Image 1 (cartoon, rainbow, N blue to C red):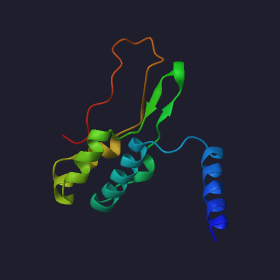
Image 2: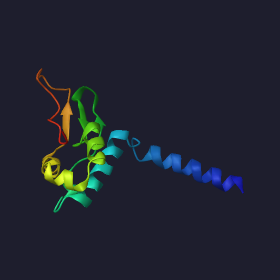
Image 3: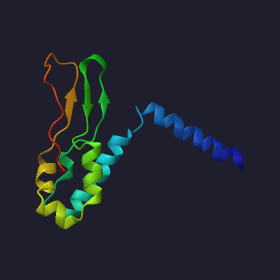
Image 4: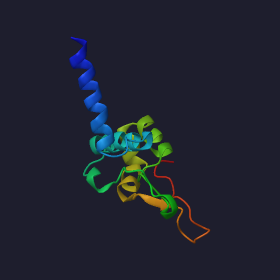
Length: 115
């Protein structure tokens, strides 16, 4: 009875490595925040936000559209507060960004979505 279970676990691990990098915590946080925004914000289109983390080495690192701090803030706010404080609108306009790999010394992350 334990052999099929072990085989299933091994197969799951193999698929995980075969399909690319495992999800990063900031990707999961972003996906959760997008889901909350979709349920709280009228007309919010979560499909427009990218929640992908991609370390491209010398070409820089691409970060999810919503930072870990923004995601935490979004989780802590009520739907009414997200709408009335403009978080919904700022989140809808957020885009993923890449840092590093640029010759621009002023390169910074975009401003926060959730104050």
